[in-house]
Structures are given as C-alpha cells and as structure tokens.
Length: 139
Image (cartoon, rainbow, N blue to C red; front, side, top):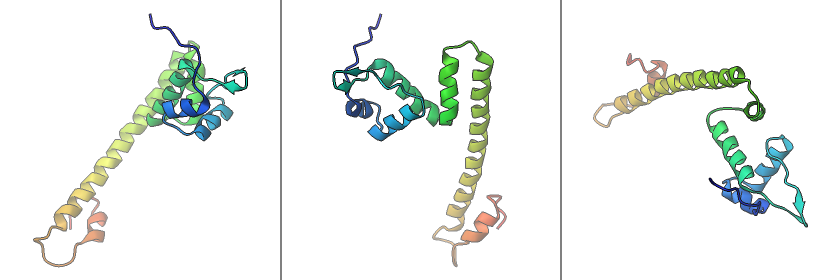
C-alpha cells in the first residue's frame, strides 16, 4: 500500500512539480479546479492529492477538455453518472477523429507542395495552386 505523505510543497515547489506556473495554480484555484490548502502557520502546503489533481487537469486539457468540462469530470469522479462521463469522453474522441482527418488533409497539401517545389522542376514553385488543388494532386 502506498502511503500519502503529509503536504510539504510550497506553491512554488508545487507549481514546479506540476510543470506549470504559480499563476496557473492560482487560476485553477479561482476556477474551482484545485482546492486552496489550509494554512499551516503562515504557509499553505500542497501534497500528493493536489499534485494528482493537477496532473489530471493537464492530461484532460491535452485530451481536449475545456476547464468547464474538467470541472464537471471532477464532480462526476465522485458520483455514479457513468453515462455523462462516457458522453463527454465520446465527444472528445469524435472531435479528435475530426482533427486527425483535417491534419491528414493538411499533410497531403504539404506533401504535394514538397513534390511540386522540388529543385529539379523548372519555374517558380506553385504554392497557391498547390493549396487551391486541396491536396488532390490536380495542378
């Protein structure tokens, strides 16, 4: 069993451990995503649970969730509404699929541009025509 250590990180060390700035920590606190720890003497110390939540927030952002959606996921984490959590995640999967399709199109345009602008072809590089062709190869 892994034991949680007593909170021991100042906000600066907590931010460093989470690879964010101190202002990001404060912003997340204002948005209700991170709790402000109780003061111990004149300092507020952060612990493993704070770091775990911060890491979740960052990963959820990477997955495409907005801060409002992340707040909702955090609420859902303590409940039993699996359907809503699944709905939110499914929407992000669909969005990522769309994004990947758009990136594939852009890659096609860029590959065509590389091909059309090779050094062994005469004349100027048809940059505008390449993008107008939409990666279809019709130049």
